[in-house]
Length: 195
Ligand code: FE
Image (spheres, rainbow, N blue to C red):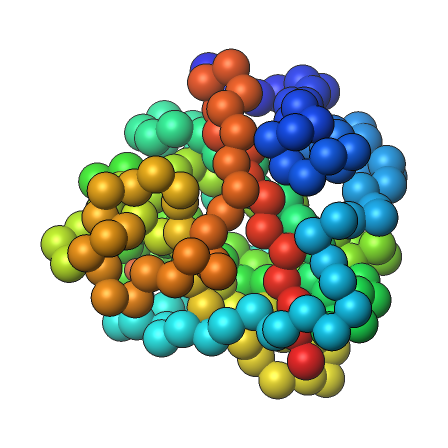
């Protein structure tokens, strides 16, 4: 079942750091996520990773990559774009691309590809499906993050508890999503720290 825009997905405190109860949907987009205990002054930048062979420029601007009839477990991914001094960055470009439930990329069109801009509070929100795996790789979502007028960070996000995390040389635990199950949907959190 697909979340309706009005349905609230609540990540319980304790799944993330204590106190970071997180409401995730359009109607609470104005609710403060901050202060986030995940950000510390002087945090390292989010590490870069290879772009891989399947990036396509000029993806559609959208936060919803799920399409009617698409197979796969729904996931809602949220987080901030921060500077190293924990300042949230508004208007940062986030361009996501990923494989479908069977581990296939759409290289002729823009299925499961989309870009968006962080909001006035530096937050982003992506609704998609959990990507399938393909030979040689563990489960991952690709992303480029670019602050206004800044350099592009290209990296990949990983899922906790994946057996193939141990055998994929690209996997880094620093790029793990924090996830929580929510009545069939997966909630994910990742904060980017950029230059
Ligand atoms: Fe990939």
